[in-house]
Structure formats: structure tokens, C-alpha cells
Amino acid sequence: MAGVVVQNMSFKVGQTLTITGFPQADSTNFAINIGNSEDDLALHVNPRFDAHGDQRAIVCNSYQDGKWCEEHREGGFPFNQGEEFKVVITFTTEEFVITLQDGSQIHFPNRQGGAKYRYMHYEGEVRIHGIEIK
Image (cartoon, rainbow, N blue to C red):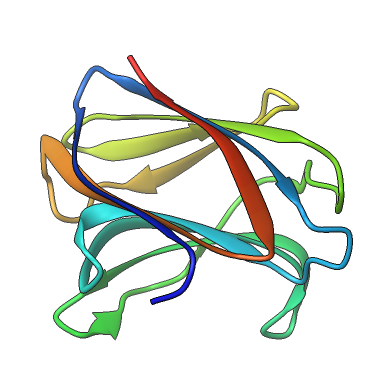
């Protein structure tokens, strides 16, 4: 699997995950995945500049039992190719709250109801330069 994988981390209810990075100048899309393994994703955040039939859209989803669940689209698109971004994620057993750098938020259901996730994966045309959990 391409991209950056972080395993055996601990991201628990009540903690904040802050991710900073740069989409490449020619980026079509990138993704931030959080879950228990590559086959068990509680949260897939996929900012799409121009990919999969979408332009300037953020698509969220989860992946369970070998298949994608229902796509969730909400909010604006404060990402620009070649410009630094910051995404802050917190969660409860009910939902993930993704705060974007323009202050807008995406609310995505925690479909698995987990209180702790240990797997993170970043993929696509992006350079992640900061990952902080506190």
C-alpha cells in the first residue's frame, strides 16, 4: 500500500489529532485514513481537487468488511494545491469532528463506535509534515 502508514499508535476519545501537510502542485486528491487496519477504516477523509468525478469536494466514508460504506459530503473546500493545510480531528463514540483551517467543521458518524483507533494511513499527492496527538 502506497503512502505513509502509522501503526500501533493510540488515538482515543477526548484526544485531538492535528495533521499538517502540503498537497502537491498537481495534486488531484489525497486521503487521511483512521481505523484499526487497512481493511477496517472508521474514517476516510478524501479532499478531491479533481478526482473520481468530483471537483473541489471533501468526501468522507468508512470501510468495513471489504467494502466502502455510504459517502458523506459536507462543507466547503479550503484546500489549495501547493499550499499548507491543517486538519484537526477529534472524536466521540458517536462522531468524528473534522475542523478545517477556515474554521468550518465536518461531522462524520463514528459508525464503528470505537473509543480508540490505532492505525493511520495517508495517501495521494500530498506531503504530510506534521502529525500530533494530544
